[in-house]
Amino acid sequence: MTHLPVRSHRVEPVATSKTPSYRWRITRLTATPAADLGTVEAPDAESAIKVEIETFKITDPNKQQRLAARRLPDNAALLKQMDEIARGIGNKK
Image (cartoon, rainbow, N blue to C red; front, side, top):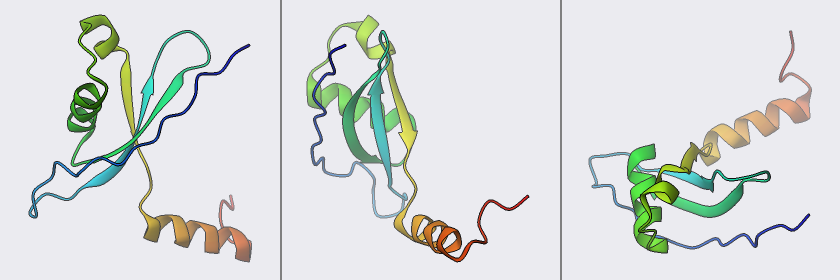
């Protein structure tokens, strides 16, 4: 099974100063495994996918429809979660 190379790139945020910007991981949904295209900064998932379409110049509508965006945790929330896990208090039922 071959894996496609992961291409991460830095993209300027599309958000204004009034709109919060988040990190999004963009994935191309095809046959297994799905391919990670990289991460972008955008205020919402739709904007993140638009940035990726422009960055990679994806002109085929079928390929554009196969893109998905997943919001990545911000550093503060991630650090809190890691701290809770380290102290053994995270994920208790």
